[in-house]
Length: 100
Image (tube, rainbow, N blue to C red; front, side, top):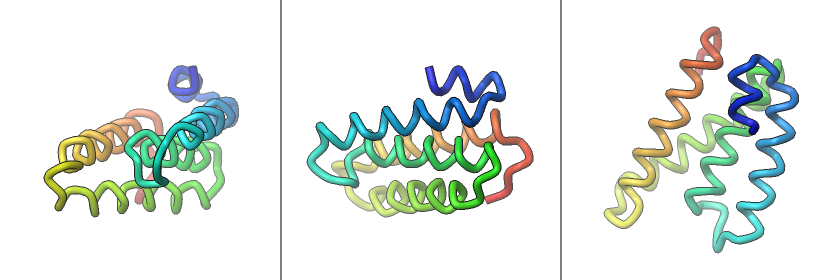
């Protein structure tokens, strides 16, 4: 739902959805570097950034950095590459004026 709201330009509502999703991911994860948590942090940051909150840009960048660090590990590199691709694609599609 949050991604759909973001696609409709309703970034503030999307932010709430991504926050809820991140909360659920953290409840079931083993670490803050688990794929679902990092992706959720990136999506939440992006929604905040699109909504005009500059701190969201930092959250988005931090998620990309975590995934970037995981590229060196054979066990996590495929998921990390997928996560980076997802975040960058969503940024290009729904945040065209954002520069990271």
